[in-house]
Length: 503
Image 1 (spheres, rainbow, N blue to C red):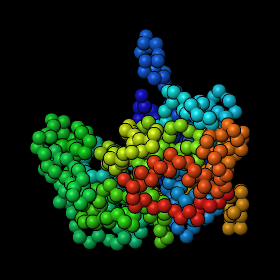
Image 2: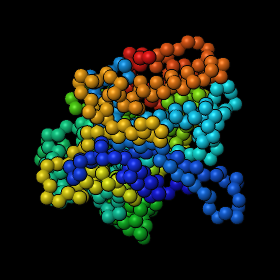
Image 3: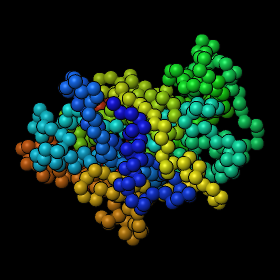
Image 4: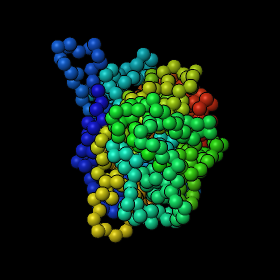
């Protein structure tokens, strides 16, 4: 129903034709990452004419985001007017919430083209049948999903850089700490190429195995990846794709693992930092790195896992919805990728969670990979460079786009609208349309447009004022979040309530 290349092509076309040059990477010098939410409208099986061989499917990009950075703790603000996390996945999700607010406003106004229909309770709404949402990311999300075996084989999506390219990129990384600007770089390049100081000893290739033996990888006792030899997995199709998830193709040589710049959160067991495939522990919560100043932003792998249980709508929108808005599929662009690692990071870590409130559950998210490369990915930009001096760097801007009629586009830098000055920060003009206070304003306008006796019960029982109070009053969402924390994500970093007491 959702061919990966079709979803990727749709998103890449939207990026190149609907987004202006403002906020995009500088040609041949900068790179960025892309994420989007695609609305898929397809009739359910059994509800169509059986004489029609294929179901008609309509696909539309409803939100999009680019970006690679996040701000440190010292730059966070208590009035909600700054974007703490500007990674593409997070921007796309916040842009999606903006789209959902607009669609709810249309539903309340009784406009027939809204994606919502009345629910069974006063003031509540639900998604119309046959609507699904697919999440696309041009790259494997940072954090746990990026910890995957790296092996030498021709058919892998993005071969490890080598020869002259290796030498130049290794030199670029010397003395370069893992920060938001180069975090993604660390996930595309083996760790022996991205170090804080020159590696003087030979590369450890102890993970290499004979080419006629297949291997399985799994999580070991200490949470590290384990490679086991298995002659029973022999296949006549040497260098072919793995037959099962977690299987290294026959003929491959495991040389290391792709590593993430995201650090284990306090309270979690740290990485072993042993040479080779045991460098990382897997399945742990991680926080995005910062330049000197630590961040409070959880990795995109962790956030996707949370959305897969709580939905993408967040607490505020849950006041109006009978059920969470879940993603039906996750599509990743051409890049280093492991279906086993993706499933582990997004689904398996929460698989055991039980006793969730009605409507909430761990989703069996479909996971697919496209063979199409994003034009402004780091790999694509490097491949086009000829006789260029200097290194390829991440683009400093982030782009937010939502399928809304008014000001759909938003370009930010360092958490504020591009062009903001120190003197102007704090004004309405410097706010991103997807920062907390702006989304809260959309929520308040939606509530104000509804007569009190027609509002959901949670918005009628008592007077609420602050962003924090409205979020906490979404009882089912908060119960689900507390259950998820207790059973799976106990070390999740939560910002102080001081950052949520704005009106």
